Amino acid sequence: MLSIPFVAGSPNWIDLATPDQEAATAFYGALFGWEFRSAGPEFGGYGMYLLDGKTVGGVMQGTQEQAGKSSWSVYFRTADAEATARTVEAAGGESLSGPHDVATLGRLSVFRDSTGAPFSTWQPGEHTGMGVVNDPNTLCWTELYTTDVPAAAAFYHSVFGWETSSASYPGGTYTMAAPAGRGPEANVAGFVRTGEPGAGYWLPYFEVADADATVAEAQRLGGSVVMEPVDLPGVGRLAKATDPQGAQFALIKSESAGA
Image (cartoon, rainbow, N blue to C red):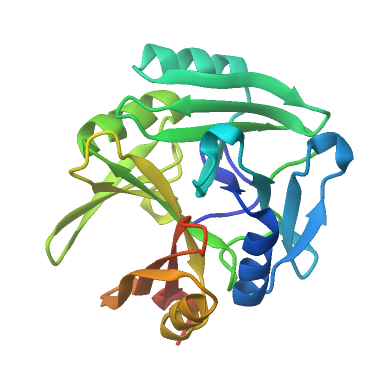
């Protein structure tokens, strides 16, 4: 489970790159009640999504190279951006951007892991990350889709010290990871094998009060259903969807969140 304050290696930020920031903001505002707040003209249109005054993520207009594409990015906390960059490369990953300062807010790096999935790190400055997690309409889980689960688990262990555990579910075994020394009760991420080469990605999960109603609302607002709601014993009821611009996300009504 995610927790604040964020420890090293835990997800501490997410943001959306979209070709239509205004339309995306309208969608998530209607779906989750998020409000947009500009980070200021010096940040090139980047803005924050807030829920009841607390930050839940960010949004930016996609670059020309990303035209037509929309996706969520997951960031993981690091205390030393340069050391993490060196570790990523030593573990077989690739540095794509940074580390570089984002004003006085923190240090940002973008990487590709050893199996090809992009991810980012954030070394906090004045901006420590999300202001709320696990509550309805906020981030509660992250999931890596990868061509090689054991290799991905080994990579993130090298980079962040993640410790893995597994659980058996219908159809197979699910590998989960927790920050170093925190134990399985502090799991923050899961690994899912995908058979599509080069298609690795991180997927954010948002806690919701009603998975069926929320995925139906996402579809009504112009999104698409990727996976209809299903029950996962001991976990909750989950579904997957995309926003109207194609960014994929997951929804879950966790059993631990109450009936």
